[in-house]
Length: 114
Length: 116
Image (cartoon, rainbow over all chains, first blue to last red):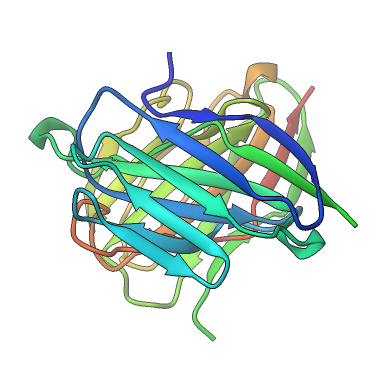
């Protein structure tokens, strides 16, 4: 069982459509990060959310952290082919025994067709 | 240029032959960690290190060893590799632990290991 459940695992859409990726857990996180990964490269940070209820925007990408800091979402408006890639959420647990651990979701492979 | 460097990028080897994957960062980061990436499972943390001489197990440490004798280096050691360790491995670093506010992980480009 994954500590962080990310969905959907695959998303294939047409250019111009909107989409949302979800990251859910029963655990509380001190922060949650979203990364994007291209083939042959390591993940690159998109955003970090820290406060419950926080919303951050990065151009056409909107990130939200749940009020209870157990879940997060990534919404892309008017997707473009350049958005194609693997999107990963990662959470740092708030509990003391897990200090230092970083847990990733399974990832969402997004394909945007022209 | 600030970076995390992993070597080798690709390695094909046989069961039982000890191997080491090196990781070096030039950003004076305190925190370093190793992950393996497998299809459908995302990245799973193998080991992490909060500081020199301080290492802790992640979620999948079995079959792996690490050491942190210097701040910049964090090698991953497979003493007796087995086929189930065939995977894509990433090293990452950040200034402090992820629980500290706003600590982006800087990743290397990955090492693809095939154990036959």
